[in-house]
Length: 274
Image 1 (cartoon, rainbow, N blue to C red):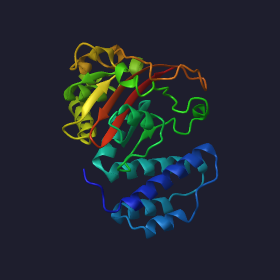
Image 2 (cartoon, helix red, strand yellow):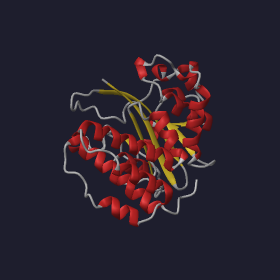
Image 3 (cartoon, rainbow, N blue to C red):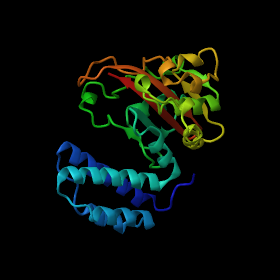
Image 4 (cartoon, helix red, strand yellow):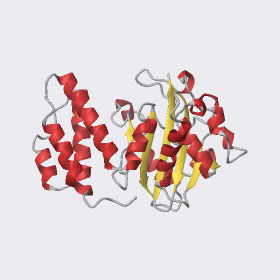
């Protein structure tokens, strides 16, 4: 998946739409009205031109409709940007996920995983992150919220290795809604499409990538049948999540998948909260 030649404009537009969406949701000052002109001057090709034209024609009132249409535009823009984004949004955007990738900089990859969990590094390709807690004020108390990851020296010891196909299955069942899931992946008519999206996400990291999970099913078998078990029946170590009770939300479980390649580390987490 090569980087686009017009990445600067794409990154600027993504950041602008996200900042506009967040400001509208949180009642903050809107980003500069001149930003679309700066983005247009950076080029970006047909996709950037299309998105800017759509943005210009969204009425700013009523505000609730403006928020919804800006959010829809951001999702559509990200989906059109690359197949990886589209697969991530189809697969996990409706759950309580954390999906983020960072650069591989250290031989001891746990340091890079911690950097991703602390949001201290950007996606190397500028692709989508799913992180509803990035602006959560709970991070004032727990900086990596909803995570409280162990030290880098301890982190690998709390994970279990996975074979590639088991990693695909683990990612696929993250589409389920924990205890409220009415239709697990194993019985869905779109099961093959869900698995195809999961493979698209993991293909990003290349054929030599290695996989780890906190699912205890992998403690004795690197190829557990996650699809048959489903998310509801998959036990996991929850020691990566904070035990702090913040903003009325209790976090008490989470299935995680960590991917390590020579160039990147990916973190995928489905979080169970009450």
